[in-house]
Image 1 (cartoon, rainbow, N blue to C red):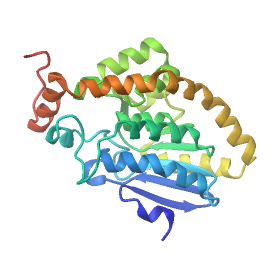
Image 2 (image 1 turned 180 degrees about the vertical axis):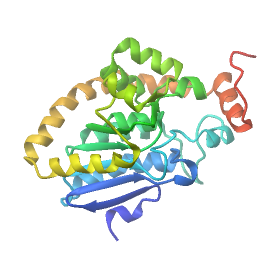
Image 3 (image 1 turned 45 degrees about the vertical axis):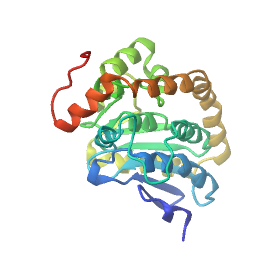
Length: 269
């Protein structure tokens, strides 16, 4: 059994020195539950140890990259996601997923084939190069959709890519940006028709896989020191504040209104 056969929510295919990692919960629009969060923590170490892999492409199964956190699961378990028997809710798992992704020296190309929301947007934007479908949407709706602080990486990467004031507005309002607008403001690198997203990402990946390995890897790691500095400065505080907002009436109202398919009524006792 390969290292990748153990994954249930990720599908990994390796060809031509490129590992294509697919968020693979298409029945739930690749929503991120606790199991997928844990798999996004460990996959980067397995890829680092795989000498057949020089570059990684990260994408989603079906029509979505990922709609982010599993809001339905949140509504069924106040304060977070549904846990399996014996499992402990550990918010630091998300932190380790972020830091291990940044520490992987192999380039990661995001093939954003459909909507990328919340934590999924964070993982996409933490990649080294992004290729996005022109009709896909990207945004972090922690605040507007579920009444939570954008604590699992959004406060780190958005200001670095688009500037502080734009990032504050997009995160606070939960703005969803189409591909062309995301490219225009520097949030993503390339925008192509949906049918061409994976092909373009693989084209770049194969170019890098056949390039000067160590110069590419160490240039990536050098620049990622900027992002890691922001992680060290912001992420733990942001995640702590996010955990606090799990206990607020606004979060409970957001998840219940999602389950009941109605508009949330925030700020009510």
